[in-house]
Length: 224
Length: 302
Ligand SMILES: Nc1ncnc2c1ncn2[C@@H]1O[C@H](COP(=O)(O)OP(=O)(O)O)[C@@H](O)[C@H]1O
Ligand SMILES: [Mg+2]
Image 1: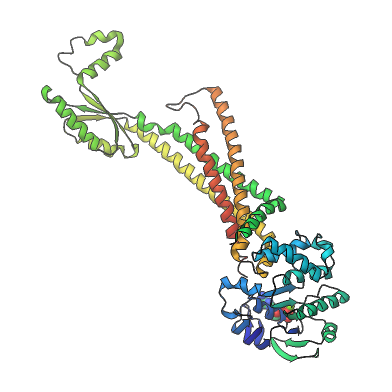
Image 2: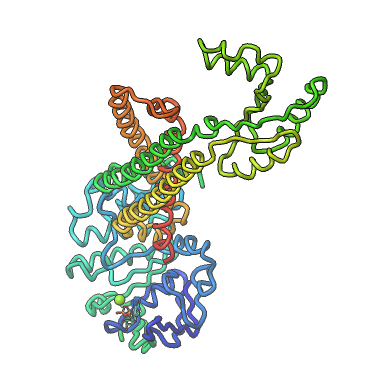
């Protein structure tokens, strides 16, 4: 569940990134966020992750009141989210298996848990044969699937993805969004920022369009 | 923190040392060099103090007593001794009676002792106390206190020699303290820069940890383990290097076989080894740990 009420964000330099944004996402909902570069899409996601704080307004994510979250609670907010970035953000010195295990270890999972969950996730994203590879030996699409497995392994309630297909060729992009659709059917909600019109048209989900820091349109069915 | 997590984080800290070999190598090099320099300045100070430090015991003060009635003598002497003991700065107190004073003089004259024959009846040598002080810097005040005791009519001490020694010693202490502080400051700057570099090269990892919901203590622990281990290792290394250097220097001094005052060579290494080792390990550990914690702190905010 995501709920934004009258949220504005002005960066210290005076840059207004978001202005009076209201937005609601139910549990298990799938939505794209579109808009031109500099519209405020990444800022919106950063507010959800508590990477940035809103200047005014209230933000609720899952069971957390993010706008007034104590620092000690931030890790628990993030554990309820699966986060995916355009640049994958894998750890180059770790192989695929350990990159996925990384987020389990970070939340204090036991060895048995790790041994059970990591292979399951790698199979889900179709990388069970590459578990020993280093990230730099994989294609962009494969790296993003590793990142997806890592985001999923802690059973998040929402996957938050900032242009996950930005560094992936069109065909592989299709695969990744299909994978997200499959994951969505298993439960978690998906909030994905993208530039790619073809993807948005093809998958016919809810589309939130942001321009100049405000929500310009919010429709279902892949139209904006 | 769960126990299996700690096991993992400890292992992660150790593995990280080997994973980032160049950075570990640089950290150990910097820390060891700093410790050796600081240790060398401490050892130099210790030896210079040993050289000028015996001054208190070497400087005898002689307090002469006037001749009081023979029968009262012992009680009076005890009274005066009690008064001397009350003075805080007075350390050793030896009494020399008139007879002993005469005998000492005879011993000094040796073959010419016959010159003093017949002096027993009318002994001109005064009874006196031979004193040493704990702290030479307050000598003149102590001398005044001693003079004010009844029946002490004169106090002798080599005050000018003492003053020269004191000023030499305090100069040495000032310089060595200044050098020590300067070295510690320089070391802190170098170490924190080295660690900052390490952390900077791994801010990506730290950022990923934050994004997957790792707590700050979870993120900090491997860095602390790593910093501490590097520190302890550098401590041992610095100890071995400095110990070797010290023994080598001592060997070359022994060949010369010289003596200045009470100084008969360098302070033996065995007397210094344990405090030096403990100091190095503690300093290395603290530097490694604080270095990693302080420089990681600003990456923790996001
Ligand atoms: N850390 C920052 N400090 C100052 N201004 C920023 C910062 N991050 C983004 N901005 C500004 O906020 C606006 C929105 O940026 P962003 O959310 O990254 O847009 P998008 O992701 O839609 O391209 C832009 O004008 C950008 O320059
Ligand atoms: Mg962006």
